[in-house]
Image (cartoon, rainbow, N blue to C red):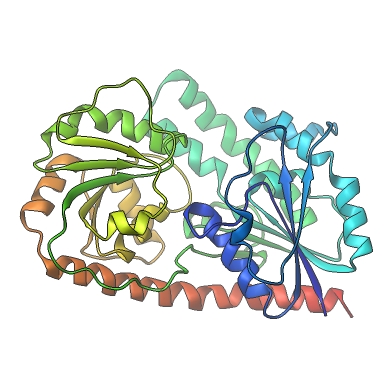
Length: 378
């Protein structure tokens, strides 16, 4: 049976961005002998749960013990040391590929994809990439300070050089957004786009919901963090109860009287199924805000910035339940004032359409990887 090896610095999970890894492991394990190596960098805690591994996946964890000099790591200046730590595992992973007769290896996330680009394997795929060029250009546009403007000029150029190396080392490259694909210097025939709309629709909750507004996110992530910082002073203008949910909430800050800083919850679905309007104040970034899909999947109306709404339109996702507005707080109040169970019903239905589109889109990517793996195993 053809062996496929996944490499990742994050553990698979059915929540957040790591859901893609979970579902890839699940789908590939139906056709291949799937191996997964979790690359642990330094003393950082392992994200996700080992229990999230699909049945039958062969699991190994390798911890980075040293540093492998790699001048190309300077193409990602803020992550150069991290990338060289990950690169120190190349020899061990080369040995693993040889011992287990791996035909194809899939590097998940930008850090593994770049740092381990030269690991020997007949077929190689770089997965879950965001364009750093688009990320820093949008950040400079949203916050045009001197540092951001400089990075907005520098990082797109550096990322073009990184894409040259991706093209050289990989047979297929997978971005998370059509906007990333269109801006890429990699030949288009090698690029695939795979969205994170994998989970089936939830059981509808169409009745009255106890939470008027929710903000959800991983708050250490800069676009989420900066969005929350901008939104916090205005939360008191929302005409209803507000819950702020997710890891990494800032400590020692005062919240308006209508706002509850919830933090991490084990079951985000239970929260969203009782929420009317999800507010996503995100003004820059790359890829897609998967929180939009999470909200629609649980029947919520989404009020967000034009930046986020337009990125969904560019990827072929549109819905009356995704509202983009310059003044997200006034728009959120209007959405709450007009809310009815029919809005929840529409959100569920539109999510189902998005999921069907994603599964169809993903089939092309899966077929391409199957061909790469099959050719290498002959």
